[in-house]
Image (cartoon, rainbow, N blue to C red; front, side, top):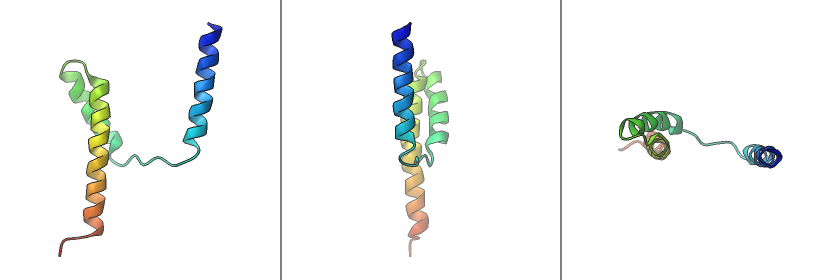
Length: 74
């Protein structure tokens, strides 16, 4: 029990140190993770895999949309 508490505390310290260094770029990730998680759950209880893939796809699509908005076709 003591080992679990110590390792959890150490992990929380490391995560807080990493999180405070750089802001997150989560554009599209939250919506994609939500949709992917639901889709993955419905497709055979693979919600975590679906959320991960959905986050990656959502982030990619948000970056693509931002580039298109910055450089409109002429």
